[in-house]
Amino acid sequence: MNQSTIDEISNNMAEHDLWYSLTTKIINTPRLSKLKLHTVKVNGRSLSDDIKISYGVDTEHPQSLTVIDKGGHHYALEFVWVRLTDNEEEENLESEDEEEMFEDEEEELFKDYEVFEEEEYEFRR
Image (cartoon, rainbow, N blue to C red):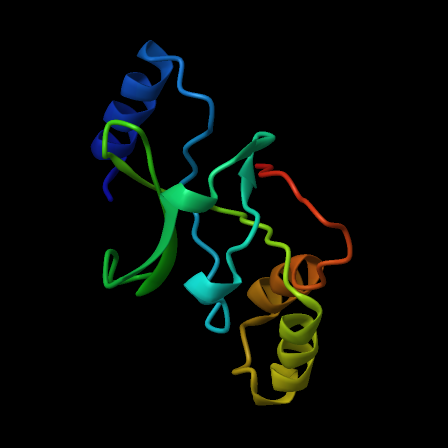
């Protein structure tokens, strides 16, 4: 997505007073699957039915989380927090050993958001 496209989307969202924010950075979360997207909130609103995992939408970020708004437009999210079931949390922790190594900054960023202790989290820039 180039800057002019991002600006155009941002302006469009501002004009229509949409209730979630566009971000441009995507965190690669290879273990996150659609099955684990039980409760997803953006700015406090549930978007569970409007979120999917996209593949190949961006060559730099081949796997990304995308929000689809009511008009059918797609937006990439920077941080998405999800509530996992107990079994999925155990599965998530067990698979950490197999996690591919991220570069220092990405690894640190991922660790900050990979433990889900609360029932619901909100989108935050």
